[in-house]
Length: 394
Ligand SMILES: Cc1ncc(COP(=O)(O)O)c(C=O)c1O
Image 1: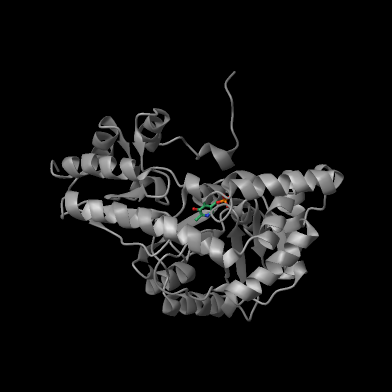
Image 2 (image 1 turned 135 degrees about the vertical axis):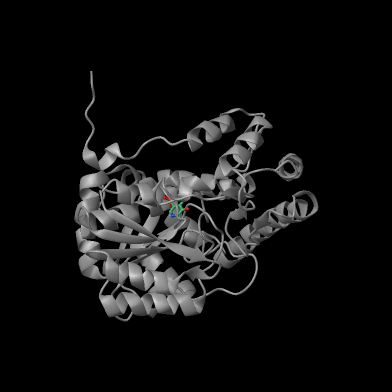
């Protein structure tokens, strides 16, 4: 059979980086290529207890169909959380529970963006959401991500020179892949531009609670007096990605439309998972839980950075994140990044080539992403030792 795929997805090709990531299947490979929370960060005992209590007390609720907007007690919990932690005053009608944070981006695109309309994103940006946008055949425009957020002049130019700009997609905290935060000044500037040109912002914040250094920066959503911001939250990095629970906070008309879109996609997010999340938020001392996560990631990131400082060729520059899961390293000009990543893979260390995060294949990059949350301390030390030796052959 000669399969004829839709135009929307025909551009989504498995790329050259797969060949490098394939090596992570080999258990002897040290992988700095994942984006997974640390195994020791999962509150396994509490989830076991909660699940057992749910099946004892409310088995049918957990197993029955439910409403698309999400489990009402969890939506109430989100309203409370948004007010307390993020300075966002919202009501339940402005909240929908999603199947992971990823679904917010997909639904926002489905609800608001026509084919060939423009979506602006940071360059580089998260591959999962880039591909969600591409699957809707949008005109995706990347704006350079500097060390403190998007280049604001370039952003304004992108808004004014492209047709039908519908969304500005930003990951303001511990960005994937660069690990940096957008400064308060730039958050305000992005919001002001969105207001000036009547464009919506999609604020994706799966890593905001994983700060282990420095001060929290107010969310763009907390500045949203005009109803311009769609905020995406997730339980993936603070509880467990496998339970697939995220949430959207957005103006009620946008939530209503996204709800219809979600109904078409998956009817509702797994109700058992939503109940687990809600019970978890009720039982856990959330601040203490986040302190524990911060301790784990501060240690792992610190270890990786100190090993890199000792062993990696100083010609390679890298970010020093204050949270999240990633370090972004950049090779000197003229060094073939793919070749470097291939050499690492051949020596059984996997990193993600920066080309995985570019808006199009034409964009050249000499960077690669390292994850510090998944490997053990021993793997970090051994893996950076290997990478360090390769770094002196460039
Ligand atoms: C920036 C960003 N957004 C969204 C997601 C999706 O997360 P999830 O759907 O598990 O909440 C990820 C996952 O790594 C991410 O890095």
